Amino acid sequence: MPFGRIWTPSADSAAQITLSDDIEVNGQRLAAGSYAIWTIPGDREWTVIFSDVAHVFHLLYPDGHDVLRVQATPQLGEHVETLTFALPLADADSARL
Image 1 (cartoon, one colour):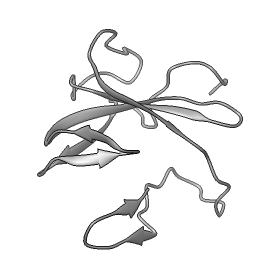
Image 2 (cartoon, rainbow, N blue to C red):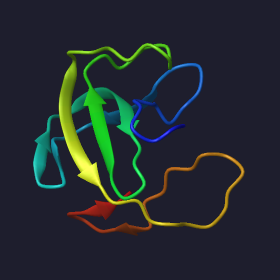
Image 3 (tube, rainbow, N blue to C red):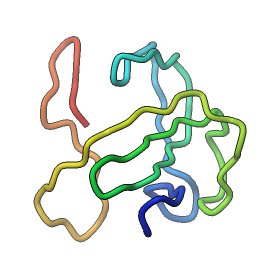
């Protein structure tokens, strides 16, 4: 995906996350519920977008439905053949995705 364009890290339908409790993402509250995850990749920083339109085709970004946008700094990880979401650091009160 070219930098600076909205993209969902998924295929066929947008990536989804369902939260059973409210959480904080980079210090901002995200209420319990189901969300689609979209990103705007950059070479030094990514924007991660949580949309309240949880079920949507992966090419149809639902403009105007953002619930939360946060900035994230990408880190190089091990090579994988397919996209993987992992929580390498997790405890009772926090996790790193």
